[in-house]
Length: 373
Image 1 (cartoon, rainbow, N blue to C red):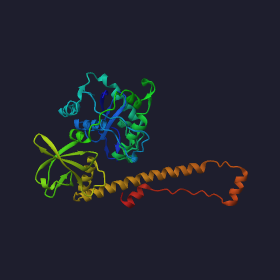
Image 2 (image 1 turned 90 degrees about the vertical axis):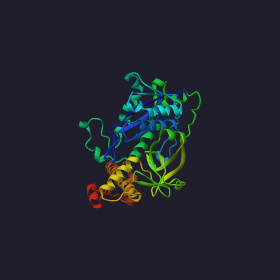
Image 3 (image 1 turned 90 degrees about the horizontal axis):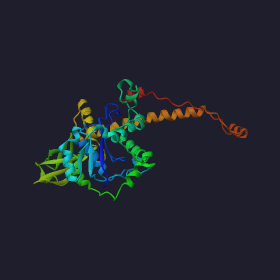
Image 4 (image 1 turned 60 degrees about the vertical axis):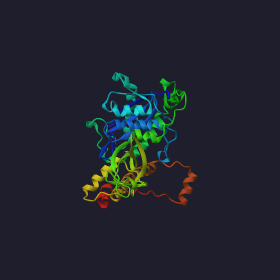
């Protein structure tokens, strides 16, 4: 594949759920087109970079909940991987991934070589993130007073919006430097052949986060205060195994067993009672803290209740904003003059005389006190 990938880091100024902020976002891009991203709360590390690299390499499939009009068609393994000299890029971990997948890692020699990589972050902040509810900005003295109150996005919802912005807007924007081609058209024009598709299983071994756990009797596992069970694991009770997981959703983990110098895949393990939910690692940690502070026992059921409570609160908070928007629209419409012919006015007076009704106003603070939000 005749495409080089460049890595870039940034984004530290979005509030999510009012009490946590994004510490790190990684984006992988070719010379012009954004290839892949990873949004999260983790500090910079080779593992965070690896997750973004995994997203860049894999073909991207998105469901209807993303509301995309275009496709994010860029994918494939790089031949060369250029980064700055940060500690997270100088790790043996990335070197090992390069060896296993067959690409060469390079550190750029001078800061000036990173301009084409760093420029998009300014674009993202001004063109996208600054329009999100809860945006704080980079200057503490100029932070909007309403940032905390307006914050209502989960990390998953922010990722949905950011993906839609990249796919439908950023990668489709014409660029005079490209002869008025869009970034995605430039990508397609530069391909000599279709990129080879690497199996997701191969990328799981290289790029997912991992930890070690022991298998209990009955084929059960414990991870982040959650109980998991996988088929065919009961026969490995007492053994230490490797768990690989996606930090964006830990309701499913992959279980591997060391067999000589190689790893053998055993099974998928699922968090009981949470099979139909989606729970990130950060959300699980935050929920555990909240349950512990309330003096309750942390279990799969209490975690499920916390997930449902959070979703209910966010829905109600958004509904209030939607009501306010609808009420403002009613008021604006009532202020507009009625432009009709005299005959139409006469018929309207005969049929029914319109009566303007004041919109119902809700006291959000009182509702929080009444319902214990």
